[in-house]
Amino acid sequence: MNATATKTVVLEILRQDTTESTPYWEKFELNYRPNMNVISALMEIRRNPINSEGKETTPVNWDMNCLEEVCGACSMVINGRPRQSCTALIDKLEQPIRLEPMKTFPVVRDLIVDRTRMFDALKKVKAWVPIDGTYDLGEGPRMPERKRQWAYELSKCMTCGVCMEACPNVNSESNFVGPQVLSQVRLMNAHPTGSMNKDERLNILMGDGGLANCGNSQNCVASCPKGIPITTSIAALNRDTSIQMFKNFFGSDHMVD
Amino acid sequence: MLKDREFYLRRLHSLLGIIPVGLFLTQHFVVNHYATRGPDAFNAAAHVMEGLPFRLFLEWFVIFLPLMFHAFYGLYIGFTAKNNANRYGTFRNWMFVFQRITGVFLVVFIAWHIFETRFQAAIGAKEVDFNMMADILANPFMFAFYVAGVVAATFHFANGIWSFLVSWGITQSPRSQQISTYVSIIIFLALTVIGVQSLFAFV
Image (cartoon, rainbow over all chains, first blue to last red; front, side, top):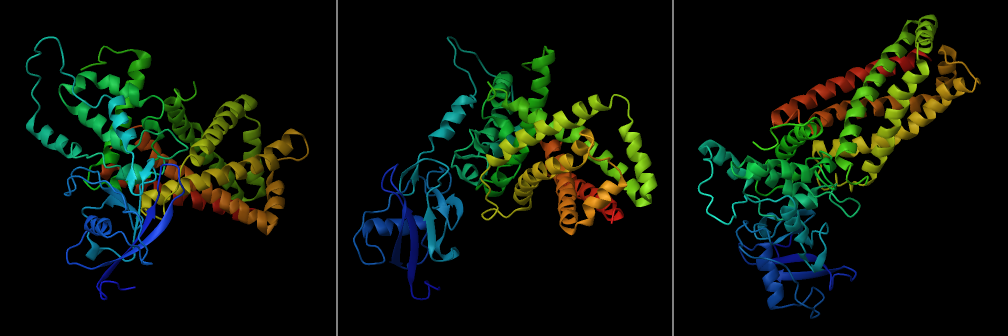
């Protein structure tokens, strides 16, 4: 099917009216314009919500924000692969373009999902550098410049949820926290001030639904749009928790370094 | 309670797969390889194993209990995954799927294998020797079942070594994980040759 030759774009969208309702497919055929991406196609449907059968329908709902692949909001499953719809160019996609919500998360409506569980996970592992106090704590220890450059790669995570969708162990059967938060634990533990709470974060990851649920399929690193070395982070945390486990059991004066 | 222990259970599962289950598997294959030297050599080796001091203790604590924990907890792990190799057809994702498929198959195979050999000997119905295996493997379907069992076991063990190294944080860098993949492939091939050669010696 070569829709671009006939100057149309065909989209098949998995729609869902409410959180509980049954999903259904709806097909749309749009006029082709140069340099379209999935979002501009969705905007076209919003402007003129008529499906391929010529019937008027409700506009398709989706989430978006930055439109330059740094916020993570517009993630959806496009032709079977989770990715950001803002950087999914129509010219580079096989038609019909199939859009589905990332069903690993609760579907709110159409392509909008509720990504709260990832933000909850960040809170759970204390993915921040605690500096609040009743008085000025002053400057923290210096971070070596080369380490800062290395850590910057980990900080690129935009909590988009693509790795969560790609991971076979993140599903309704399991309470695995998922790959997304793990790299952030490594990032915070690498920070000179953040590392003062290293043992707390590791102990949280050694709890219910934590790190150990990783099954090493390595889909997360293959799918990450930001190229974050997630599986290296997981292996690094596996090592850290191995050591933490022995420290906890045998005792250590180096719980916090 | 069990949920809070998940980390330790998973680590125990990973460890027991190598020590002692994987080591026992290797030892089992090595002893079985005596079959290639003829029935007498195999029977002599089998009798040495049978006559080991503290045999029941060794069997229960080195084989049965670790194996049962690894098998039953492994089933739980296997069935909590939502396989998606059709979406992500990478080598590692396929290994993830095969690790689970072979694991489930091995629970069935090993249960049958123990019932057919060790259990029969325990109730005094048969004696574990060359003829017993020759009788079993004379049936082409059982022979195919045993070949599948051997290949599944060697794959599961070899790939398990790879994931053991990751799960305990030994191989962290992508390069070390790549090299341990090659090493696990060599272990898989070597053990498969040893195991299948032994099977052919019985027919």
